[in-house]
Amino acid sequence: MGKKTIVFFAGAAAIVAASVLVLSIWPIGNDAELKSMEGNVQRGAYLARMSGCIACHTDVANGGAPLAGGVKLATDFGTFYSPNLTTSAKHGMGEWTIEMFAKAVRQGVSPKGEPYYPAFPYPFYAKFTDQDIADLWVAFQTVPAVEIPSDDHQLAFPFNFRAGVKLWRAAYLDLRPFEPDSAKSEAWNRGKYIVEGAAHCGACHTPRNFAGARQASFKLQGAERLPDGGKSPPIHAQALKGNGWDQSSLAYALKSGIKPDGDVFGGSMAEVVREGTSFLSRQDLNAIATYLLGANDDAAQ
Image (cartoon, rainbow, N blue to C red; front, side, top):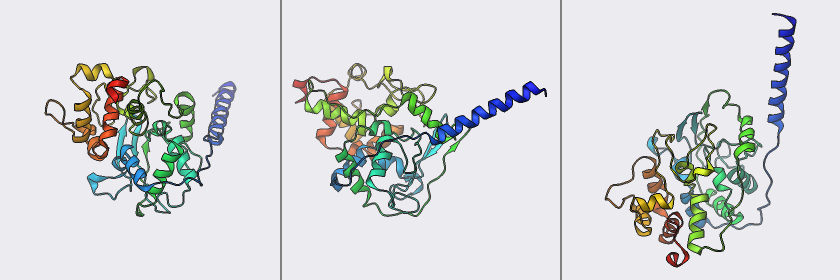
């Protein structure tokens, strides 16, 4: 190997090492002061259902304890496992503060300052208000501790380099809070908050690019490659109406899992209904339908 080649590789290695160091120490996230917030356990438990926390962090198939984690999510980037969210001091959130919780949920940043992989839908949870966070926090404090460690994600290089997620965040992350539309009805805005925030419908019903980021220009137009190997249909107003959905049938399907033709939801959508939307109030189910179908203010009353 010639001297110039050695110098080239040495220089390249130095650049890589410097890049890794920069990524590792690159700070992310903003602190929040929420100690004075008073949460409501019932509202928090309801929001946790709406947000899919129970479904994603309870390994029902293997008899796992509530919110103890271990649910497997196979993707093109590797296999993710949901973590333990119980009050275990060693394996869960037992030693967290509400500020740590807020930063994790709304910004995707761990108590150690590390970025969470976007398999955790924190870009949607950025829509949560301070009150939402306080409600969720007190609800999670009621969960019994389960002394089971979280499984490590099984990711190949370079995806196993967690600091690299900071580059993904810089390119794609949108943490804007929820903004209601004053020209729309209260029901429509409530539906938008649920769909684009807590229920994170776009996580499955919007296609993603090569980096796993949602393609905003194809919002709610369905996706061909879901982690479970299936695909999701478009759920924007034109598609829903074209397939015979109306506000009543959509709200009923989200409650019961039964579609207008008498068939039932299958795959991951069946789980969404069973563990999430079936627990929602009639008012919230109607709000979701109002937003997705694009109903005007008069129809939304």
